[in-house]
Amino acid sequence: MYIKDRLSRRGFLLGASGLAVTACACQYDTQRTPTSDGDSSLAESALVDLSAVRAIGMMSRGELAAERYAGALLVRCAEQQALNCFITLEPARVLEAARAADQRRRAGAALGPLHGLPIPVKDSINTREYPTTAGTPALRGFRPVDDAPIVASLIAAGAIVLGKTNLHELSCGWTSNNHAFGAVHNPYDVSRIPGGSSGGTAAAIAARMAPLGLAEDTEGSIRVPAALCGLAGFRPTTGRYPTVGAAPISPLFDQVGPHARTVADLVLFDSVASNDHRPIKASTLKGVRLAIPRGYYYAGLDPEVERLTEAALAKLRSAGVELVEADVPDLASLIGLITSQVQCHDLNTALPKYLETFGAHVRFEEVIAQASADIRGMFAKYILPGSERFITEEVYRAAVDVYLPKLRHLFTDYYARTGATAIVFPATMMPATRIGEDVEVRIRGQSVPFPVAIARNIAPGSTTGLPGLVLPAGLTADGLPVSLEFDGPAGSDRALLGLGLAIEQVLGPIPPPHLG
Image (cartoon, rainbow, N blue to C red; front, side, top):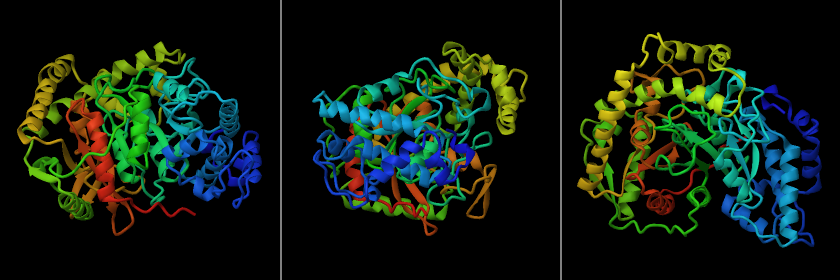
């Protein structure tokens, strides 16, 4: 079932696969009392607010049936389908998997750490039971033979795939205004972007369609949507989780990772994805050093972003955090010599290899020919041989062999020099823009290129391969999320998550979106 078809809620529920959702939704009265199985008396409206950790705990203990929980989430998906979060959603398949999870529990089988949890998966990551379109027309019918390793790990841990989420076409953008499958809408203001490229996953988590989702990040595709949708998002050190079976941009930068509403749920995801189940505890903030590189990350911010960022920093300072002001020298020039060059070069080779390796039965040239006009234009200008800004092998080798090592050394030296556990900065220069405002934006009366406003601050972390954690800092006067990013040294993922558990408590939650 394609959500792009814009079915009404009734049509969604009464479709061939939606009949099961109706049956499930009607089976549970919102004031339902516990059954002999110990099923929770929580109303369906409360079920969708559960964190992944709490929902899994209740299902594992038999306090909540996995089928009932999946049914509540599917009804929420139907109610909020206008957000256009999903490309493919098959309720009957989800409910069947949930019933199987309940049967395993009743039979006394060993339960995985993600028992019964429906997880939306970005539609650029291979799934055996669902098409993987990468958000582009030529791959509408592409059905991979196997799950990507990251998906297989989640399923082996007890998770259920809750459909495939919409994204910026071929992951090539930060808006998720997909011209082939329709724009994804931000739950905090449906006229605005959710960020990209993993906008469908982020919007689904923010809208309470699920508590935990799978996204992917090359240059901000986890962190930008997390920031604009008010979520906790985590891009691990490059290579921490396997990216095999995910439609690529650059093997040097690509990294899958999670969206959630709590850091504890990110920790849970990390334990499964990294196969490291040692507990992560909240750090003690007193005496923790966080670095503030104002020269690059804080210049030219939107006034509301600046206000909320400074208020959040004041909270951290009051909690005992030591804020160290120190710039990262030559950062802008190095990013300018590496980030775009590597991506534009690698996309031209990595995507054809992906199509061939996983049996898409469509050639790279066909994918581009059938892509939406904006994507064709981007490839014609930046990617394809003979294009106006085609990256030569000489330029690419300089980026990878000369400038990238310099950048990595620069950050290694910076952390050592400052003694900082992480650097902290606003994830984006401005809140979510309106859908279609993706060329230039106005900040403090000045015209700023959209890619700069959205991607300037997130580019260094993914280019260098650092772990990055995004946490909401508050809402603007217009009710839009503003978020901070915390980037730690390469390999410090567990320490960064422990830091996030503590910082989350200091910053506090933001209100959920007001959805009709």
